[in-house]
Length: 103
Image (cartoon, rainbow, N blue to C red; front, side):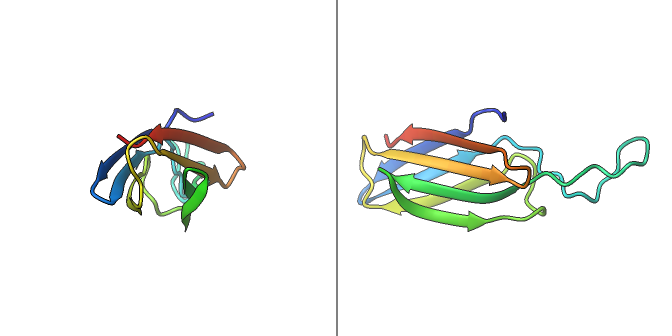
């Protein structure tokens, strides 16, 4: 299982800015190792985010996203104490969900 995501959610007015740093190798399937063998593709395919259980973001990603991707988005109506959960699923079926409280 991958390392936990680092999620920060900061309220400002009637919205919250959410910043997420995901730990993932994000291999494209086109690079080669030292022996010349192709490194198999391994990348995040789907990212979803919820605000107090309600979906607020859904994204489909491909192999061209950088290693350890960073994602930032705003959630309207979020206030201090609300819960933001972020989930990713990769092309090997691995899944990770982490949660943060809006500050």
